[in-house]
Length: 417
Image (spheres, rainbow, N blue to C red):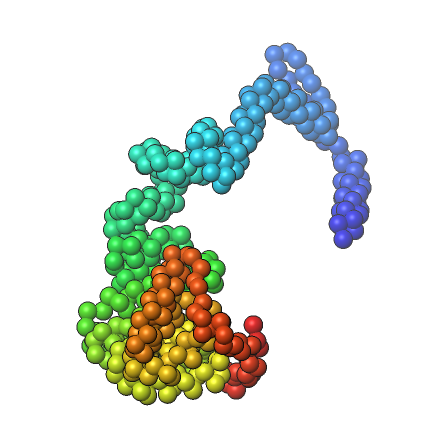
C-alpha cells in the first residue's frame, strides 16, 4: 500500500514539475539588485535557488555551532533515562537505598523529573526514611501534584495516619476529581480510619473507570460493603442500609456474612437466616454455612434439618459436616453429632471439628477422649499434626466424593471444579 502511494506521489510531482517548467520557460522573470554601486542581474529562478542555498548554508552553520551542546544534552538524557530504569529495577528488587540514589540522579533531567521523584519517595519510605520521603514528595508535587498527593496519602496510611491521608484526598473526592489510584487510596485510608461511609463513595467511580481489575475491585468492594454494614449502629439503620444497597452488593458473600452477624446482634435472627438461606440457594459458600451454624439457639432444630438437607447435595463438605455436628452438640445429640464430626475429620481435619468432637465425648462422660480431642484442636491451631483416636483408626469412613448433580438458579447443571 505504501509503495503505491509513493508511486502516485512521484507521478504527481513529475506532472507539476513539467507544468511549472513550461510556465517558467515562457517568462523566467527578471531580478536586479543594486547596492553601493554594485548591480546584480538574474532570473527569478536563479534568485530562488540562491536563497535556498543561502538558507541551507546558514542552517548548517547553526547546527554545527549547536552540535556540542546538543551532544551534551543527548548524553545527559540517556544517562537520566538509564538511571531511571536502573532505579525502578532496584526498587522492585528491594535494593531501596540504591534505588533512591539512582532515582534522585535521574530527577536532574526535566523530562523524567516527576516520575523519578515519585519513585524516589517510595524507595525512601520503604527504606525507613519517612522524613526524606516527605521531602522528596514536596519536590515531586511541583511536577506531578495529583500523583504526589496520592502517594503522600499512601505513606500517611502506612505510618498509622490513615485519617490524615483520607482528609488530604477529601477535597478532590468531593469534587469527583480523584484519579483511579486516588479513589483506591481514599477507600483504603477511610477503611483504616474507620470511616466506611467515605469508603463507599469510592466504589462507583472505580466501577465506572474500569481501571481496577475485576478481582481487585471485587475484593475492595467486599471489604468496604462489609465494613459499612458492621458500622450500622442499630437494627433500624441496618435494615435501611441493607435495603438501599444495589442488588449486586447484597449478593456478595462477605456482605451477607456481615449482615447476618449484625442482624443477629440486633435481634433480627429471622432476617439473617433468610438472607443466608437465599444466598446458599444461589451459590454454595462454606463460609456462610459456618455463620449459619453459629447463629445462636433460635430455631436450632429447624436449622439442623435444613443443614442436613444440604448434606444430600454436599456430602463431602467438611465445613458443612462440622457445622451440623456442632449444632447437634448444642442440642446435646451426642450420637447424632459424632458421625458428622468424624466424617469431617476424615475429609479435612480442623480445630473446630476436633473441639466439637471433644464436646461430644465430654457429654458422653468420656473425659480422657475429650482431652485428646481438645489437644488435637490446639495442635492444629499451632500448625502441628493431630493424633487420631483409637476407635477412629479401627473404623473405616468412606470419604469418596459422591457424584451429585448441582444446578444453578436457572436450572443449568454446574460443572465440577
